[in-house]
Length: 102
Image (cartoon, rainbow, N blue to C red; front, side, top):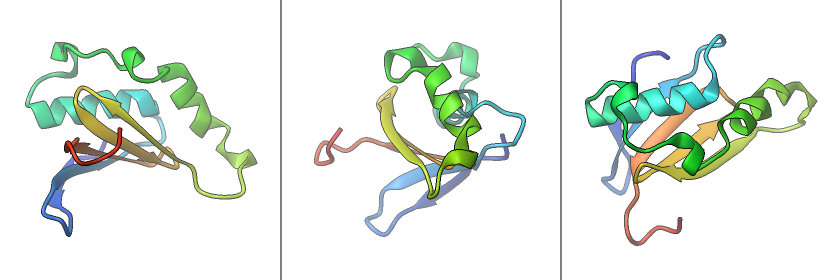
């Protein structure tokens, strides 16, 4: 994973985004990005990705991407964060706010 970049959107909400390298699994990038936000090693996370999404299915979505005609965006929650993965190339993580849908 490339270095995580912290930013703020137009509503003032902070988020972290990171590029996913070609040799990295998408599921691993999600876990590592959340751990970066938490300031811990990925092995120290108490939340398990498989409780939110099937990691193998997430990874396979982007390995078969050549068969798609448009961009693929997957959004889910994990460890109290909203996770957005776009085309298996970038992961964005932001804290969930109470006024947002799950």
